[in-house]
Length: 123
Image (cartoon, rainbow, N blue to C red; front, side):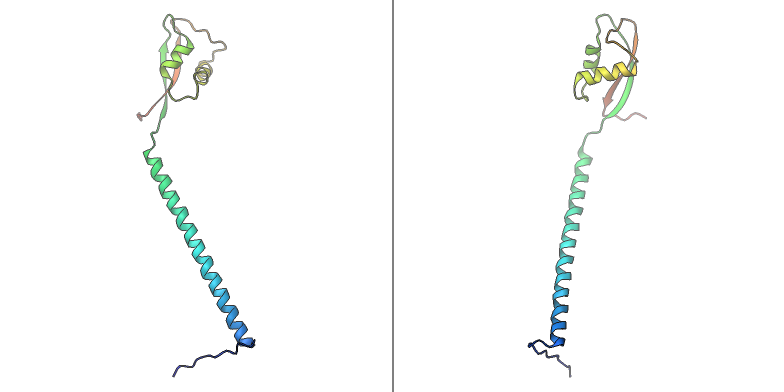
């Protein structure tokens, strides 16, 4: 025969302790559910963001050497190789920096190193 506990709801110490344990248990259960839900949402967001990254096109930066032809300018050269820069001037600035040019004048027959981007990976 199982013994059942009866508590005097009038404020006995046993009843108060029992009630306190119930409230603590409920709080722990609610807090655990919130934590599990939060971790689940974070995990799902991580999985979804990783899936989007796999679909992104990756560009690799390369350099090529060109010979300046008559009529070429840094703007025309940068325009031929530009599709990844914010603006044409930032590409021109990088070409000038790589080639250690102090001014934007270039001369036919001069060799320049020009950066460009490609989706193909070359070993």
